[in-house]
Amino acid sequence: MSAIADVARLAGVSKATASRALSGHGYVADETRERVTAAAAEIGYIASPNAASLITGRSKNIGVLIPFVNRWFFGELLEGIESALLGEGYDLTLYNLTVGGIERERIFDFFLARKRVDAIIAVGVELSAKELELLTRLGKPIVGVGVPIEGIPSLSIDDMTAARLATEHLISLGHTRIAHIGGGQAERMGHSVHGKRLAGFRQAMDAAGLPDGDFWPTEMSMPDGFSAALQALGDPRRRPTAVFAACDEIAFGTMIAAQRLGIQVPGELSVVGIDGHEYAEMFGLTTIEQKPREQGGLAVEIALAMLDDAASSRPPTETLLPLRFMVRSSTTSPPRG
Image 1: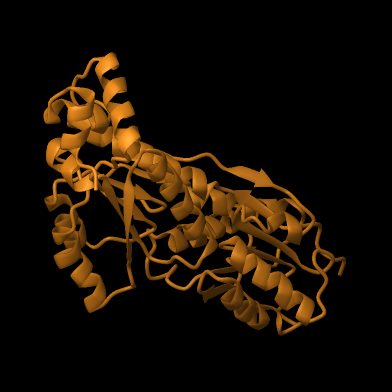
Image 2: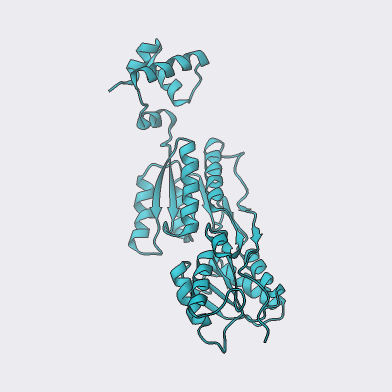
């Protein structure tokens, strides 16, 4: 196996100069850098990440905390993070956070402290005060995505505004019997994504002088949305004419449940979601789009900027991302009578 000493000898420079030229850190004349690069290519030398770490003090590795990997929003966001990191020559270490328990505690108490990472990106996770303290104690840049984290630069949409807009769209079409199928922790965790979307729904209903409407808690997935919608739509005497779903996957499940019950969408039931899922156009779903893949890339950009210039490049604590309302065929006026 070729070594840095072989590259240095072939290029006619010192090992330190060859290392600086290949790592990109430290001044090296352009002509010398080209000579070293050509020598490395000629003998097939591949720089060791561990050796580069000793020079730069960086591991070229970013830790990502994420609660799910099998749901569309999180999968898209993770792909955006991974793509951006690969483009910058960084690796990714993934920590899949469960809701609670020993496994989650070990990630914060042991694995993050032991594993060398340059920065941490927390995706859609609600951190306890103890967990946040343990993270900040590491002295690494931290970026939050999806859920604002106190004192930490975070990217998110305005979930309450998104929910209010979705509900107001249904009200503007003439619906008065509107149900919300949303996250199971919405009423217990008012500051969570689930809680904010429920609050936005109720805010729009109150402003229109309408009763709060039924709230059906469930998990944020298509099968769970299907199950909750069967319950919400099963009694024709109490059946809503419209459903605001807390995410597009719940909305898809609702549309499938309506079909199973013989309820026409949108003739007898209008459905609106939030996310901009890749299947939304196929389902004809009216939705409020966010772009999770772009959010992932932006999170990486902020984390690396904080690494390069910790003081002047620090973004505001919370950055609200733009939304796009896409009206499709899943919403219309309520049925007569």
